[in-house]
Amino acid sequence: MPRPHLEVADVFRRHGPAWRAANGDHLSLAQRRVMTAIEVCRTAALGGHVERCESCAHTRVAYNSCRNRHCPKCQWRSAERWMAARQAELLPVPYYHIVFTLPAAVGAIAFQNKAKVYALLFQAAAGALTTIAADRKHLGAEVGLTAVLHTWGQNLDHHPHVHCIAPGGGLSPDRSRWVASRPGFFLPVRVLSRLYRRLFLDGLAALFDAGELSFFGDLTRLADRQAFLTHLAPWRKREWVVYSKQPFAGPAQVLAYLARYTHRVAIGNSRLVELTDERVSFRWKDYRAKGRSKAKIMWLSPAEFMRRFLMHVLPDAFHRIRHYGLLANGHRADNLARCRALLAEASREPERESGAEANPSGASVDPQRCPCCGGRMVIIESFEGAFRSRSHKPRGFDSS
Image (cartoon, rainbow, N blue to C red):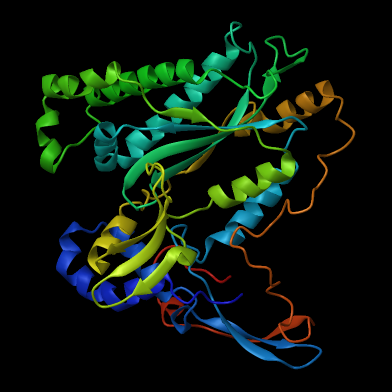
């Protein structure tokens, strides 16, 4: 795989030690782990192996990857494995993409209470979709969905939102028939938005009453219940952003989309433009721009770039991909079999289409094939690195 001319790892290696020393009191253990993992990923520090081509004797050294889920270099293999598991679960129906976002004022609370409020975001989005879909005035069916959490915007600011992918239909209440959604339309966005708003704000108030929210800095005043309720009151009347995109053209497009989104990190190496002692520049899209190009270049100081990147480190063991309704883990296989039977597709799996398993990183080189002659590369030697020989090596390090 060709190495990008610039990587997030280069920023952390060049500026991370000084910034870590100056800001150590403000870094969590998880953020420190992410910094270290990215810095040593695919370097001699993690060890590796030597490969030789059986045909032309071409030799190369391959270093181990950190496998940290926030590392830009380690996600495409994880995405490939995840997508292979999802391949057989696709139904031969249109799929829809619905996005649920949080207002900035509420997002600030989420930032200080990530595990609790991000989980609530999932619950409110899934609850709105499954409740409205079950309503006979809309679809009248039990639906399934896969939800993926993203916490960033294009400029790396904190912008929590959930992407939901759902098949266009579901099982009738008695599970005797497949109820298809109208062509090109899944569920009414405004109705979804208002139920999502209510479910989220009610859930947030319940978390407060249970003493499960903490407030720091500018939000300290919200520790008072009346101040907290007053802060949220205007957001019970304003419209929350929920939008539905056009349905996918087919199963291959669903897979390609999921490959890009499920294991994405805050910024990929391909967006980086320049790194100096004074600044980091990267490409971004300004979706609020009107009448002019949305593609722009942003310049940040290395310290600000690292601060923004580390804002999106998730709590340990937090699941950023979740399944609900018909796709919930407990009964997914039985539900999908029932759906296929009702769709007269029980005897065959969804057909693989060209490009369905595209490498989400854009790489087209088989890491097991020789780059010179295409022959098979075999491992002839393995070696350990400094981190792999320590009992206290950072969590998530492994071979690739």
